[in-house]
Image (cartoon, rainbow over all chains, first blue to last red; front, side, top):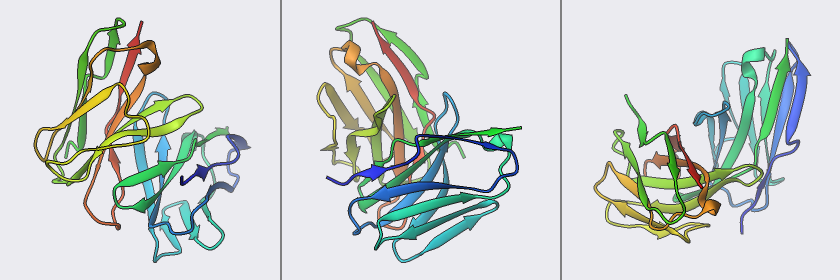
Amino acid sequence: KQEVTQIPAALSVPEGENLVLNCSFTDSAIYNLQWFRQDPGKGLTSLLLIQSSQREQTSGRLNASLDKSSGRSTLYIAASQPGDSATYLCAGTYNFNKFYFGSGTKLNVKP
Amino acid sequence: NAGVTQTPKFQVLKTGQSMTLQCAQDMNHNSMYWYRQDPGMGLRLIYYSASEGTTDKGEVPNGYNVSRLNKREFSLRLESAAPSQTSVYFCASTRTGVNYGYTFGSGTRLTVV
């Protein structure tokens, strides 16, 4: 069974800090890895999708990387803001039918 | 674009009651999915439909049935609700192929008492 793990489960940082969220997966034969943001009581918003042939993707202050050989993906958030406070989930797919989700990292950015 | 639309947004059921959760997407996606999200358990796949006319079990299918009504719509039915099915249910869709990610609906918060 493919497993996706996110550590830490929660993270609190002061505003303006650069931070890295981690995602690890057990099977290196991953096709895609997608990062999502979830606000309390809301659905999942897609942030970045990294295909297996890519090593990273960037959108604004966000940069996601994928290292299949080490089984890791990271989401880098530059110059964090209180509005970045949310739960961040990563999900990997090993065939195009199913994504496997991590449990998420709850981020709190303090003003 | 509406994206993925789920109805209802909230529902309270008594144990043993039945109900159907509706999901529709307007992005011409082939594949659709139902997940449940529970505290500490992350998102778990209940059922999915790779294309119109096909459905398959996911990780936690017991107690649920699904119908892929057409390319746009994928419903989830609870025949006899149990308190263990109290959860937030999410529908998602994607294009066929390995190069596309998920689009999620806003969820249905279900409580079974």
